[in-house]
Length: 461
Image 1 (spheres, one colour):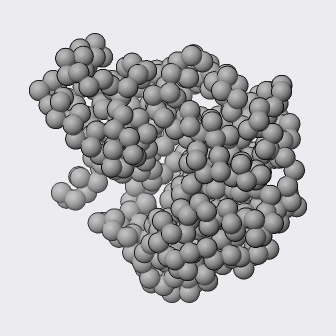
Image 2 (cartoon, rainbow, N blue to C red):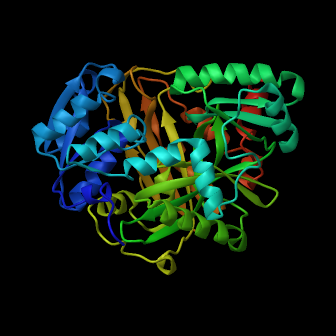
């Protein structure tokens, strides 16, 4: 397959600048070292003493504590890459990881962006163009048109009636649970449109909206893909990310319980076909709603996911290394027939926040004890004496377990949580321990609304 001009930017490099912080910076460093690559860490003034700075081959402070002036400062990051002699940039997740303009700027600066091309990010970052591409590839989508909503009120009303209430209004450039509103009936439709347009304009710089059927009791299912620049792509099984609070994932697991191979197989292959059609490179995640035995595409994340470890544990594939090798131009070293997912894995996101109010908790970690043993993995950047900053996301660690069955994995996670101690700041560990004692969760009888309902019952008790 001939390379496009964008794809020709992919190539050999020996030094990677990690344009991120926290546990994902540590994770990327490890993958680079194992591949024999040097790393350049960047930091804000708030992160000068972060441990991942001392383990990198070099460290550059690029700005003040504010993320807007450091980790989101594209010019500063590109300058740091040039000063350090880096040939590639790994964006991790969050920050600039799905910013097409940043990927384009890196490409034009002669750097390899460890991720898809800027054109792929732009296509999949706009929910309308993404849905159009998925429909063309045969990926099942949520009922609703693949075009932006018009301004004409009568046409909007007709579209809603054709879909059938309840519907959901979404920002075309949205993400992270923002820029969406459920409309249960016609008499609140136009008010919802007006409010969501303004939210979209402020948050994403575009008032463009689209409308879909609102599924009332779905699960959130993801399919992980890896693609190279040579026309090869595979999917690595599936995971369930239904345990969400305010549209933010709390616990993830792989595989999704109760979904038989005959149902998921054609969906996974459709995702692979979609990647081939758009010339996708690197790793990515297709997100679906699953209800009554049917899958409905909602979006694609064109980056590494926070929850990638559960897929690594079940598939045995180092997803971060695969992502880096794809960016280097290597041919994918496994075929679909080589992919075998075994056992069951859970991941708990450990956040520096109050377990009841969920308000962020900054401060110094005075004591830290982490679990060890077979089938237990902890991805973290903190240590005793580490100062948790108020400037960034509250995620401080990911606790991952793997066992032969779902029930055994749940039991292992209970023990792992019991052996996790963080003092000096508040964390959500007590909340996670209580969740893993819940009967409905243990039986897999949950959907994306379950956790919010469970929390309401706990508060009322």
